[in-house]
Image 1: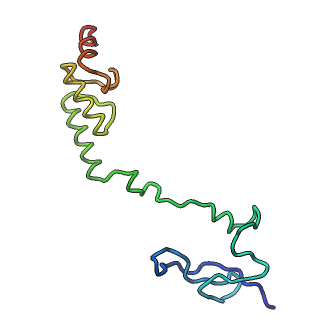
Image 2 (image 1 turned 180 degrees about the vertical axis):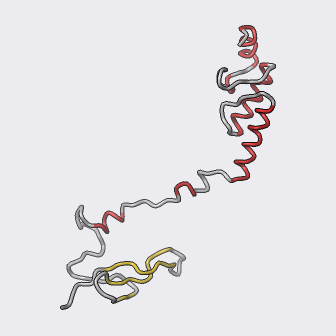
Image 3 (image 1 turned 30 degrees about the vertical axis):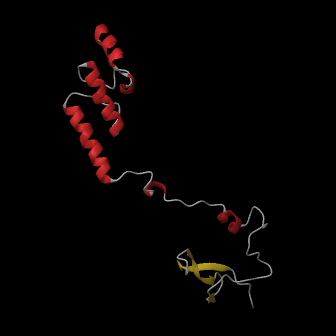
Length: 143
């Protein structure tokens, strides 16, 4: 008995514009293959108005991204290690930055300089707010 071919992707590859796409299609019900999806009068291939139950329409709404591997979101190992080394150096001097980023570490150094003693992120105000005036007040109060 003859059946309607139902397309499935067999192989992925790149086209002449180096776009990633399906390059080989097969039938889900038999061993027939070709280089484009099977066409059928009963199956709408353009997925314009198939309805809520159409997997093809649902797939078109997916957004793919690199997630945690996105180089814009994650820092390099070199930068990461550099920041951790700077944090360790600050801790070895008695300074407690309120974070491990370069900005937080530099703010803690500046606050320590203004205070005349080591900055403690867990008990003192935000390091970025400690200027010479606030440092003087804190020192007078014994903070």
